Structure formats: C-alpha cells, structure tokens
Length: 111
Image 1 (cartoon, rainbow, N blue to C red):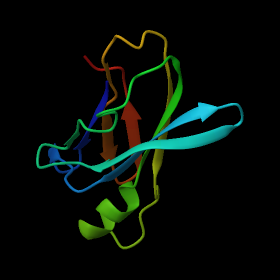
Image 2 (cartoon, rainbow, N blue to C red):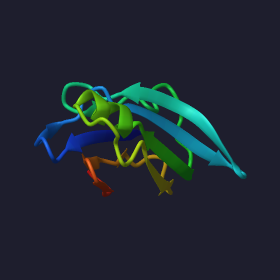
Image 3 (spheres, one colour):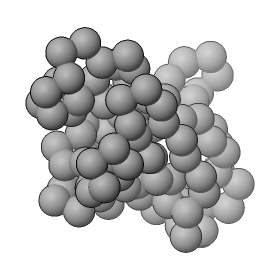
C-alpha cells in the first residue's frame, strides 16, 4: 500500500484538496495507476486500493500550484512536486509525506 499526506508548514495545517497522481515506471514510460485528492487531514490512502503491489519504481506528483493559488498566492514558484521512490518489498506499507511552503518542499519515508 502506498499512502501520502501533505502538510502546509507555512500555515501549520494539513493541505486539503491537493490532487495527487501515482505512477509506476515500466521500461522508460510512466504509467498512471492511482489518483486522489487530500482529505481534511491532508491524507490520500486510496492510491493503490484494489490493485496488487509489485516491486518497482513509483512516482507521486502533487499539484501544489493549484493549492497555493487557492490559498491566495497569485504565482506559485513550484507548480508541482514530484517524488520518485523504490518499492522493494510489496508486502510493506509505504507512506510518503510531503511538507510544503510557498518556496520549498521536502519529503521523507514515513511510517
């Protein structure tokens, strides 16, 4: 299972309504396999729902530009954030949080 959470560090709260796309690399192509929007707690837990996990390279794309425009920022510096990571053990849960602010973002392997 792959899950994520987006926290807006400039506001000190969860970022709601952020569109997230999950893709898997197959050869040199990226294949979309999941899509969702963050809930009131900034979470998306349904990206791999109903889909068997396999080892491989995955990418999460977050539409943070639209979120920041909704928060009143007229011209966001980062329109999106992309995080590429490896799934080695398909039985393991993978939580990949994203911390955002108007001029930066960071991530880590969560639990």
